[in-house]
Length: 213
Image (cartoon, rainbow, N blue to C red):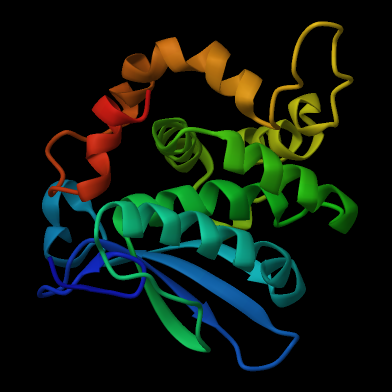
């Protein structure tokens, strides 16, 4: 499978996400969803703006996101990628996962962002997809960054105690950050996928439903 950017199919106008990174250390990173050839179906727009992220905030999450996505891409025998100045394309499910973290940190205090990264890293892919779907359905646009699901997502990832260092219990090992969350929610993976659209085009990452347990 030929891809460009982070797993984006190298086909004519696929459904994808784009991250537009400015050249300077200041400015704004724009994350948009492009419906491609699906635009117009059931009223879908050609492009939907999803998040305007301050450049310094983007810099705090970019490397961890790149590492996570490249591990997944290599596991699927797809080409790894890196962030470059200008437009970066992402496969649609990876774009949704990125937005879960971007929405969580867009208005967060800088000292809470590492906590959000740890919690995001601890989530299963299908849990990220569910969080994206629930959040986008109610508050999926840039101007809605401090209300409803977007605010709840920020609190959940930046203040969630699962990312804190745990004291090792006697006779047991300390779980990795996010590991407890996976144990508690793993059995509900199938129900989390109810928010997914089964009629969307194929994604190599959808196989996670069967293999990520």
